[in-house]
Image 1 (cartoon, rainbow, N blue to C red):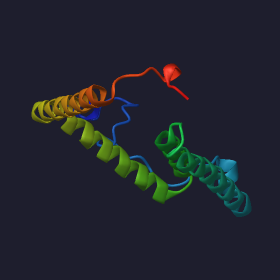
Image 2 (cartoon, helix red, strand yellow):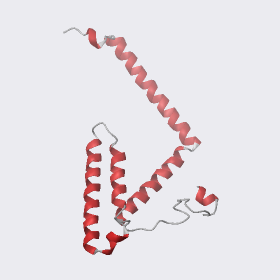
Image 3 (cartoon, rainbow, N blue to C red):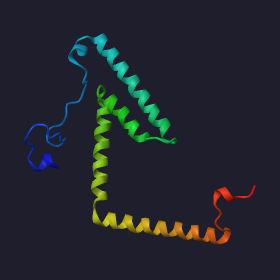
Image 4 (cartoon, helix red, strand yellow):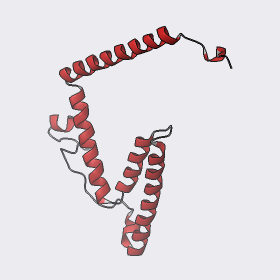
Length: 143
């Protein structure tokens, strides 16, 4: 937003619309000079990124920030691989679009109404359950 409003002036705005970031390896120059070293570097980056992504996938059903860790692994891969950079660009664009849609007053009003209806249904179901079966504290359950 700020990159568009100031016409792309100023360094370090970081806006994708002002100046597209260059795709490709971000390895240090001394690594890029040697093909063998660069290939080893890429294999290492791939293995580290894979370990982080697999850890995130494991965290999805378990407690933990699974999606955050998966995106961190993708960011690690994006330091070397163009396909990961493109996936991250697409993901950032979709997240930004979703955030903009969520700020729309009509969408917010609809979400608030649906959430309220859902909470009323849950409260009614809970009230019926307590009326039917009573409420017993867990430490007073007979054996």
